[in-house]
Length: 167
Image: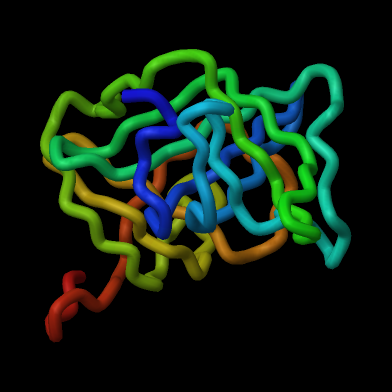
């Protein structure tokens, strides 16, 4: 699938990896698309209230979307500001086809619920959004300001899902 084949109003996640640093993530949706120009348009992405420029060497931009067969990822994307009809957007272009994203080699259940995770190394509990669960792992986003951390052994302490609590 090409990025411009995604549907307008589809939710997407923009991941920007900065060389030797953390990654930033934005959840947004597609506002417009153009098959002729091979792009999608999204609302302007901001950080600390400032509109971002992605014309920086050394960054890696990936876009994740949902398909009927699960999550797909577009790698090596470009983002730039663009004015269409007097409105400013971020234009997202990917010259490559999407690839199926399943690093865990197991089916995932998408949760997207707030929960608590504990870092076993530092014995620290953190508020997080539990993104998905599978037989071989889980994914979460921490909602606290933290310094970059090495790969950590982490476990889910608690989260609510469909009127039940897992502990």
